[in-house]
Image (cartoon, rainbow, N blue to C red; front, side):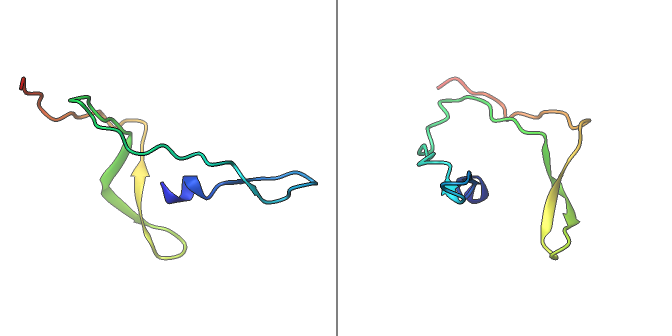
Length: 69
């Protein structure tokens, strides 16, 4: 998330202007499922030695069980 917040845009007049105050505070889930195609269990080393999750097209979504409150 920090990397997304540090994104910059540029033109001749403002070569390194930030994308704006593009921040929205985290919202409550209210029992909604959160899905991703990032496999956090498989780690790969990047060129700088950091562990990076992999992304594959054949990853299936998993959701936590839903309970009525």
